[in-house]
Amino acid sequence: MNRIRSTLAYAPLGRANRRHAALLALACALPAAWADSHHMPSTAMLPAYQQECAACHMAYPPGMLPASSWSRMMKGLDQHYGADASLDPAMVRQISTWLEAHAGTYKRVREAPPQDRITLSAWFERKHREVEPAVWKRAAVGSRANCIACHTRADQGDFDDDRVRIPK
Image (cartoon, rainbow, N blue to C red):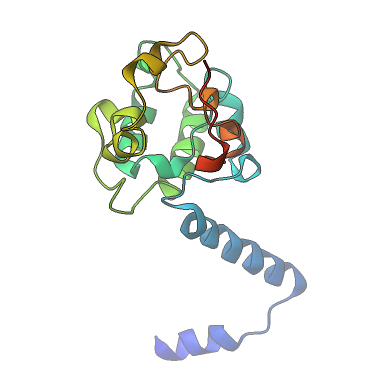
């Protein structure tokens, strides 16, 4: 086996194989780069995820939930927080695979929050502890799930505290 491995390691790669190897390396690096991050640029989002999920709400960065939460969510799209968000099986597989590969793994998102809701996670509560309950009820905010109301570039994957603007 070691001999086979060493032979493969030194086998010359053709142009197409080098391109495939480079793309594979990049694809493998992306989950590591953005896992646990709440700053995934929208350009790095899976187009199918962006298209299907952002049709109804912001496409949340997958690092905001652990893989177990994404898995349960994708298996229950017919009852997605009170709405039927069903997709064809191929699309569910594609989006599920991507979400789980980019899911959060760091301690702040390792445990699934109650009801798999980002807004009920311990890290969300900690980051928003100074927000008065009345703020969530403002017409311009609407709910804790409406990130873009205060995080002005959330749709671009930017949740930087310096760009928070709480509507009146």
